[in-house]
Image (cartoon, rainbow, N blue to C red; front, side):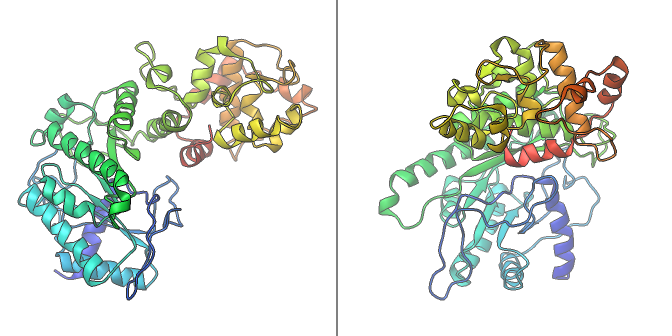
Length: 453
């Protein structure tokens, strides 16, 4: 088969894997080498959903020995199959790099012959890139469940990032949709990579090459199985704590196969994916715990509000918060205040008492924060109905109308807002219409990328 035909097939097959960000590694060029890795991340372009688009993202092969019911590459599917040789992968990467098409490689694979054989082929491709072409650019490679620790060791010394996808959030779901895979074959290598990364950091002064310097990631498919958001986010929390993952990626289930064990969805659950990403930011940078965001009575995220706003409304007794007195971590719990704006508030308070007009300049999103704060003991103008229902309805209206290009709704004025604020008091008819609009808004997507909640 022509190499361009292989590229067409295997690049398309790789699009379902979301876990390919590329920041966190720093490597300078070497004499007679080509390319470099940079700590700020090598990807300069991003898709609308936040995924990197400047890596050469391919599968080594889409020929698979497994019959995972959710996967397009399952062995029982009648699709075009192709396999790159290690040499072809290395040559393609260098040719694309020299043409300035890409700045790094994301390499994954279906399982051909056996996990060990597949992993060996991946290693050979990257060995050629690093040692024959002296390529110093960013490389992210998948770990094949069931591979030996020896292969993981060899590969981890050559790549910047490794990932091993959990895919399904529970053992029961794995048995139902991917019965040939074992949970222990996924978690054991993940733990081994984590411990090897830690050992490498501790002995960094002794070795020139660090083991997987950009850390490891994983991916969870959302919507293929009946697990709740709470189940998924608690799993993510456990992975961050126990194996120190760099990121957990969430991929909305795309129906590509027909099977009685798979759900029938008219479209991928993109809004649910967005909510999980937003909650993920709260876990990693805002000091929230999974059990705070969701509980047995509320096992799934609110479709109308982001997780931070929803939490604040359900814990309205903890508000309002005085901007001029709250500590850093308390500020982070206020909707509309992110990590950067919270730090700016702490710094600005040292020289002046803050007022509402100052907060906007500091980057606070007042259209949300105004409902939960006071400045010098005063509420924002006309926020005089401090109750759960009032705040929730107005936040939902603001969220929807401020992101609708077709709406004539005007953003609230910061000062003279008496008449405009009256427009916010919505009736049950408007509320019902909003409930029917359950796609991610532009602001939802921005929150997922920036983490500013």
